[in-house]
Amino acid sequence: MPEKEILEQIAELFKGFSDTTRVQILSLLQEKERCVGEIAEAVEISQSAISHQLRLLKQMHLIKFRREGKNILYSLADDHVRTILEMGLEHVME
Image 1 (cartoon, rainbow, N blue to C red):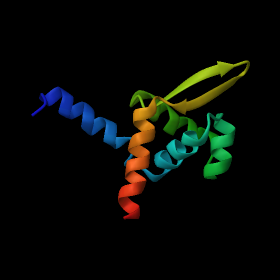
Image 2: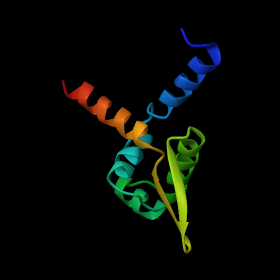
Image 3: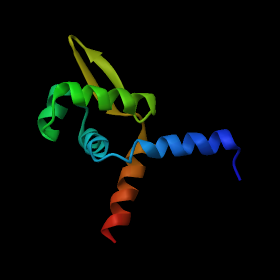
Image 4: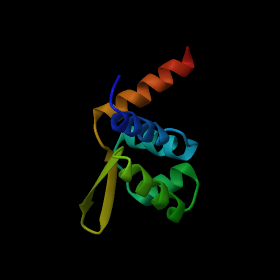
């Protein structure tokens, strides 16, 4: 069995997937990188609420960002996040 610290990190990782809005955001970012405005429009909640969720997702290392001029573009942190999303969808569709 992994050490307690590793188990805590795994539990923290899965907290990122425990909220419908965060899963919506991750699903959108699975398609392509997006700015806050695009995400807010697609999810139909305020930009400030999206910014809060993005901050949490960054802290959980599920997303990353880059600046392009005045815009900040968000994307999935890595292919592991994409795989978790795909496996979750596959699991619930069975």
